[in-house]
Amino acid sequence: ADPDLAARAAAAKATLGERVFILGHHYQRDEVIAFADVTGDSFKLAQLAAARPEAEAIIFCGVHFMAESADILTGPHQKVILPDLAAGCSMADMATAEQVEQAWDDLADAGVEATTVPVSYMNSSAAIKAFTGRHDGTICTSSNARRALEWAFGARGGERVLFLPDQHLGRNTAIAELGMTEADCVVYDPRRPRGGLSQAQLRDAKMILWRGHCSVHGRFTRQSVDEVRARVPGVTVLVHPECRREVVTAADRVGSTEYIIAAVDAASPGSAFAIGTELNLVRRLSTRHPDKTIVFLDRTVCFCSTMNRIDMPHLVWALESLVRGETPNQITVDPDVATPARKALDQMLALP
Ligand code: 13P
Ligand code: SF4
Image 1 (cartoon, rainbow, N blue to C red):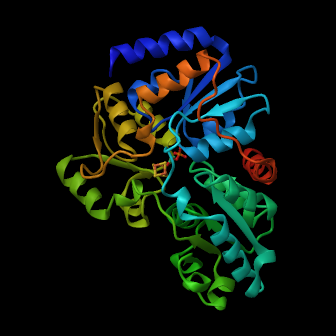
Image 2 (tube, rainbow, N blue to C red):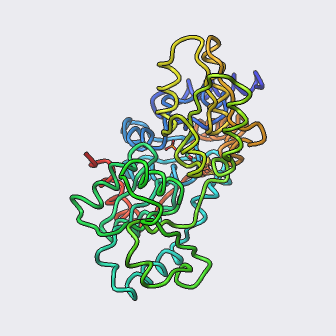
């Protein structure tokens, strides 16, 4: 890390004081996390976005869909800033509003849209969240996907769920947490007519999984798990539910980034973990626990390139622009989209 940039960030942050609130996702670089007022997984950051209503500016060190959600959840006087507008998410880009509307039309043609509940992962655009709200669905994150599905099939009375856009989180949660089977799940491929499914398949499925995935977590394989077990005797394999089903079934434990952190923090000295999630977080855990063996599940998997776009030059630029009275890279969601999207986000925040 460049000491000049760290000093400039510290000086600008001190000048801004309470006027700025910096949120950092666990996948951010160490040098950026050092300036975060709060860190968290997607769910915690959604809860905390509104925690400082007096802050005029919220700098979101994460990716675009997170900044959009923060804008939806914060007051109209608060400006949400994404230090690099190119920090998107390849998974969120895998479901466009047009494609999802088409899928809903396909469900209507099969006569089942009224009994289908959309459950959308936080990792989706504001437009997808708005679609979800308009159809009385909910948002979920990796830490409450189980509760979201239980609500969809329970209090909400759905017969099936359209799960967007991460097929792996949807499948892992349905099978491991709700006792469903592979046969209850179908994959809707937006590039194919009617998702590549028959009307009977759409009707009979309990989980209609969107064909989307995380380009980082999707790269861990069953072989990654087998190799690390051979390399590190007695290792506990801990993975994120965005990993493929074959990886989750071969692992010892599965959970969101907050869950992974808590599991490692609570383990006794001498424990060994192989962790299948983003590399910045795994490295930070390894540094924080020199008394534990912490290895990355697969050495060929890289950082999340878009999370990594938020670096010190961008953070310093954002902070110094605010000091000059400018508002750089502000993320704003149109009210027509924000209102139904907020309904779906509020439904998530109200899950039992
Ligand atoms: P969580 O923050 O819910 O663990 O999700 C991980 C992720 O991929 C965020 O982009
Ligand atoms: Fe998107 Fe995966 Fe990166 Fe998260 S880790 S921002 S899901 S590409």
